[in-house]
Amino acid sequence: QLQASGGGLVQPGGSLRLSCAASGPTFSSGVMGWFRRAPGQEREFVAAIRWGDKNTFYGGSMKGRFTVSGDKSKNTVYLQMNRLRPEDTAVYYCARSTVNWIASAVQDVARYDYWGQGTLVTVSS
Image (cartoon, rainbow, N blue to C red; front, side, top):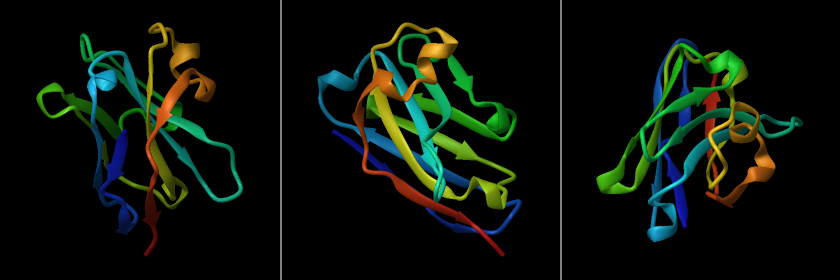
């Protein structure tokens, strides 16, 4: 089970940190990803982290502003979002995959088998 939290309302230029708490041994390995869905749009890849070596990968517009990290002892993955823009407004989801660490694969929604319920981030003044 995955539980995402930390969303809310923030002004442009502000920061938020999302958390994704995983329960159960299923989530102690593999890849954890963050995706988002803006109103009227398809789900978009945000970032991913591989539990084994903490290797990370980011979607294009998020690179340099967002940081994904993980705490294995807490089975929790974080998404630190800085310099937020109105276009970052979306429901953010965390998900788990056993996909090989290949760029095209970790960005593929269909490769993730467990999903959290999502947390809403609204960037507005």
